[in-house]
Length: 238
Image (cartoon, rainbow, N blue to C red; front, side, top):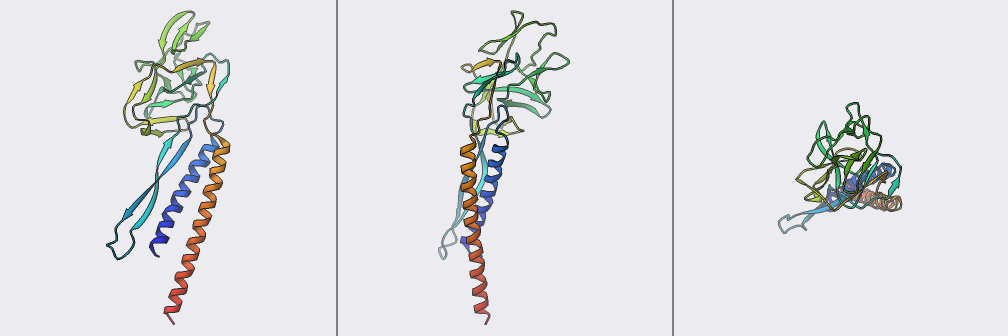
């Protein structure tokens, strides 16, 4: 197999990965706070000593998290929260602290604000947030200050990674930051709203069609190369 075929194979592998990423995005069209992902292609070249053309290989191992704002939908839920602008909520999971834009919270038996999976919502100091069981009215200000019956209790922490490219998927709506995070003060919290997924179905489906066509073209090229090599071997073997 010559260099052109090897190059095409690496490209095919990358296209398969991109199709998987696109399918995952489409599957989460209705997932609250979901952030779409994209795949980043890179090229590696190797000098073969001057007797042959340089060997070029494609790689598609890096993923990019799209931080575009999603649509805010009114729910009326006292513990439903949506962020307008940059930033994430921080929750404590068994695997460590994670960021999320999914703001659907409930209270557990201990009175802590948690996600439906039981992950604790953290305040600006990194501590769990408690809601009194006998509270008749819960209000959450635009700066994330939580009050019960007019009495301030805590301020919900809003965070962002120092380097956005260090965000990594750690679940359906959870993100892991490989570097440092910092508090953010200019984001707005909306009580009674949830942020929809930022996946655009039209764009994703159009890209899926492009990827499928590109993969089919690459497959046809490999088949033609295979046939060409067989013919050369048969001719030389006579």
